[in-house]
Image (cartoon, rainbow over all chains, first blue to last red; front, side):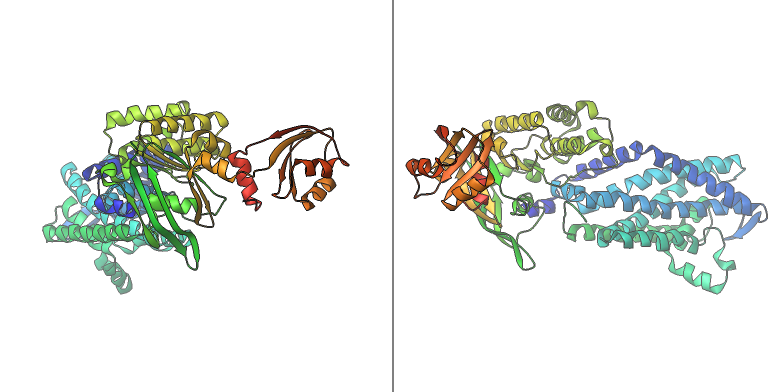
Length: 267
Length: 306
């Protein structure tokens, strides 16, 4: 039966290459988005980090004294990761609504490669934003070393895939656009701020701590910071856990893609 | 020698309590260009979507010949659905090229085939334009180009001529005819029945989800055309009141041109009777017995004539 074509993943690894290339094209054709992606980290850094840094200069973090600006810079990375979820939602919505997902699946793109490939659009975005952030932080006197930062970006990308997989899952499971937009507004956007992006979780009221401990981003920021600031404690373990969490989330999303009904138009 | 490449057996698709298609049995052979005709909601798109594997039937089966489909699976089919399958973030080139890539074609050949498809649909000059900047007809051309770019063995095109100008429609059907002549198969639906009649060998007529006719198109026209259809030129125009009176006598009248009408007589009437019935209203200057076109016959059928 032709409905079984999709189960044979005819394209193999080539399917991943096709999706990545198409996402790259979609990103590069969207000039407005590129500009906004360039500007966003600059605004965050100047208006939040430098603003707060004027009265909070240094903080004690995991046995090290680091500047607040550097601490908050890694927090911005977390906020940017969360904001990239919306790009995945928009891209997969286009695919789902206009039948491209059906076409790609029928042509033999495996669900796993589909999820990885569709995360390319936000991956390029986060790479650009991370670079801009590093440049501007260095201009304002950041002491983070380039190698540490680059290693941290690898963890950032792992974390990004966790959140883009959740974004894919949301897009697969929710067909109502109003509900989807509500989720973006009321859950995704505040998600970044309930994790210790700009504050130390040890220094905040209990209710914020509790919320923070339920937010995966809290642990992911911990993993990113353990690399960027080269903190001594448990960095390998937390990175392995973050990596496993990402793998599990990609697997869940892939499963959702494999089980979903294909449509050529979504109303 | 023609080979059976697609077998549809006892196919039904049910939405809640209503059948979109019911008990369809159909075969398609290599070298054929088959027209699927039916009014809106007759089940054409449901049938195409099942053949393409997008929808799963409630009962029945769709089987492609294993040698034909080989290992290319979906890439063997060039599927253009009725709805626009398009990536609105990218441009014309990207959309068409994507079709070649999803068919597993290498980049170099894909680029050549993309150029060819753009040229066939006369959209080469639009290749760098974002698809949302195009007109509806231009978007339709992109959609078709994407679906045929990999030059599949089986073309499955759901109303590809909608929104296309006559010249492009003609070029597309000519291309499909040539592809069929190479031993490929084409299954195409359209409301442009003149075009289908000109290019298609076989006809599948579908209504309320059921196949009413499947077979040779010319035979269908011969077998089903009313035996007593005449193109008649009169000395004056015939007003509605007279047409109504003639209808009551079992004579169907359709206006064709100035003073020119199609008269379809029922089995009991003949030309002598026609002259008798009409002489008080108008004079018949010319009378030509005619065979009906697919379009005329289809309209005649829709009006309950078959």
